[in-house]
Image (tube, rainbow, N blue to C red; front, side, top):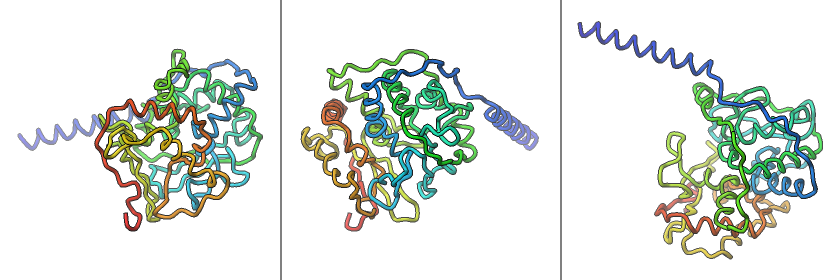
Length: 330
């Protein structure tokens, strides 16, 4: 009797799992039709879009062909916005490519509508309805204001066409099914925070700039509760003896930025000016980083001050991290 009951339970589990797998296989991501609006280009909008693309939102870094052998992966000559292949040593669940964002019609965004680009940026759905892996930070970009996302698209439309075909990312099973639940349509207007409210605007910049994502440790793919901005997320190139761990950005006096002043915070970004101008040294276990210092070197001081003002309002979290765990003499 017990044996029969055990077999019955096992059968039910198999049927349930099979049904769940079938459901996920045929499940469509939450999506809405792409907007039909066309983004108008103005000098102000183009300037703001370039600033977001190159610096704050770090699009240029993630969608350019870069030199992984040098500090903070400088962009290669003729590699701007043409897409990239991500090294398998990063341990991503599949074979990952960032698409070409130039205006090339065959290999880039030349045939995309403005609405399709906006939907991909903020909702994680490609032109063909495919779910984008959230390495593309659309879960954070959904907080990007309507004005900023339109500025971003306006600028992207001006990037000269470059014929560089990138493969479509192949996500491993079962992650390819699980990510179908990640996209969420943006169904209401997203206003720009008041720039005069430095804390609110700093929070906004810290989100679309990836600070919250990279400086919040995760467990099983989800942020650890109570650990926002507390650092500890590990990034490494497997087999290359290269690893870095994100720093604690909360105002804890012992393990975070509690004793920092505004000048120290700005100086941290300014120190890589020479590297950003083409003098980035080779990577070593002592300097390896995925922090886009070369892009962030272009963030304006007023915006850095706003981010710092916001970080100072966070709850201090005691969380010591070793930022270069594989460095000699660490």
